[in-house]
Length: 115
Image (tube, rainbow, N blue to C red):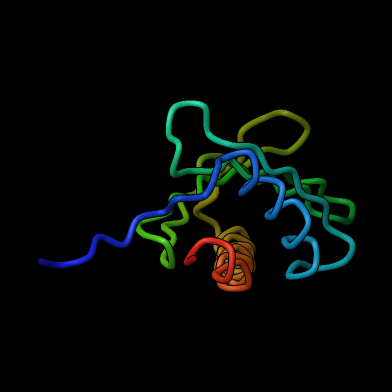
């Protein structure tokens, strides 16, 4: 019988761990907010506020596929609370960079999530 590898961490405890760890994996000038996803106990909602004159806000959904692997999905990109076309090369580069930071944070928290 195979052992099922599921996330067993309390959603609020997980969000708090992400709040403490994510800023260390990101650019120091960017800000982030992390909350449990109210509709999915295995997911977090992450908002990243990019630094600089552009003032973009990136919303991601981070879902734990199992206790080690996360699926990172872009939900929205806004500038001054207006949706932005995320298909441009510059946006795609920023999105890939932030996804990398999110994966790094998940990896740093494996000690907590893979108990």
